[in-house]
Image 1: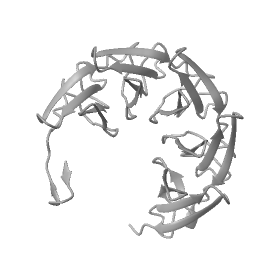
Image 2: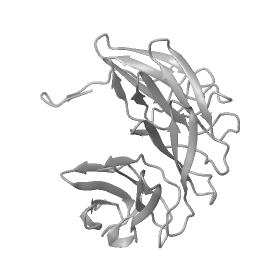
Image 3: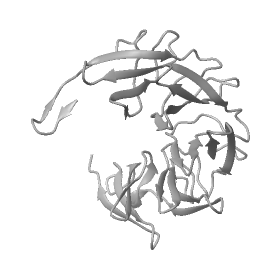
Image 4: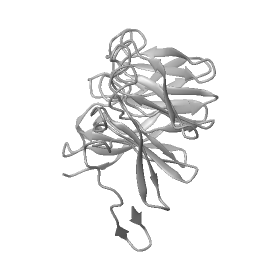
Length: 272
């Protein structure tokens, strides 16, 4: 934990790599005074864990160890809370070893796989955190789909059904989305790590009402940046993001996107 007032840092737990998990990848979330997270490795079968941290008691508890088969393996994404359940994804595992969507019930301490990716038209290898918009959960897969370059999908928690609303083709529409979507004024914005006009990633938006996807920017490399990796955030009407390569020195960029006039600007090039 970091104390902004005192400017002090304290390690409150060190993962041991065995039953308690190893290599936490995703962000924590808070739910009813407890912090929930996942590890990408470790656990009983070495396939990752779901754990809780109690900030008051400063205690950590593993509440589930992934088995790597039908229940999923290697969670990369952060959890989200929706109507009292925590939803997450695993990159691998499931019936076809193409990843899963799962729920965790904090009251009953029960985990359930609610969808198994098949790896073809429905996508494979979900990496990004799900988001909720109008009672549907939206997410992406890093692979699979009609073009084999990833999908954008919805999960209906009520009907427990999944629908692919876009399959990335790998050229102008982008390929291999990694980061979570964000919602801004009724549209969902996201990035693909690769693809686009010159294969260095795209920024796209999805209209849930019309079920249409539009690429609003293709990264060109060099000064314009290349390979956007983390999720966007919104601040005062602009969307901010980073690329891991490109820029003046090839060390990555910080950029903004203006949703109104559809313009992108590099506001900082990292020097390395």
